[in-house]
Length: 159
Image (cartoon, rainbow, N blue to C red; front, side):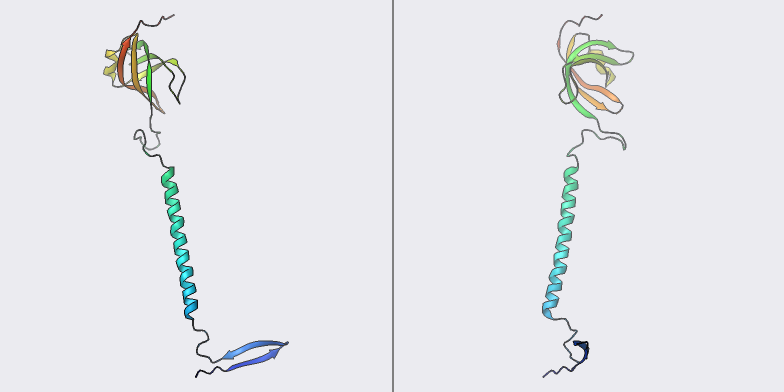
């Protein structure tokens, strides 16, 4: 049988614990260990839930596929489909003026000069050609690629 010697003194009508010689006092009970273990497990689970939420949020905020790889510090090119009529060609500047239809989410219908890449595409164009092309817009400007002649009409009157 265990015996515990507890001595106390009276101080201002309160019982004050002075000392003990009980072998079980100060030892951690199995219930206390279980509570502490569950609290630690809860902290670990909470940490991993927060980490998962952070990773998921950062993955969702990234664009699924950039339109074109760009050098660091340069915005990737945006691609649009252009439809219009060739107004004039400036072979020396390697540019073509196109009277284009409105381009959704980019610009209204207007006549505008564009660089053409590759330069050899200019050779197949003539004023009055109805064309479609890929319009690439980037910080340094806009250019047409994959130009296809889809028809021919009379060139617009120039003033």
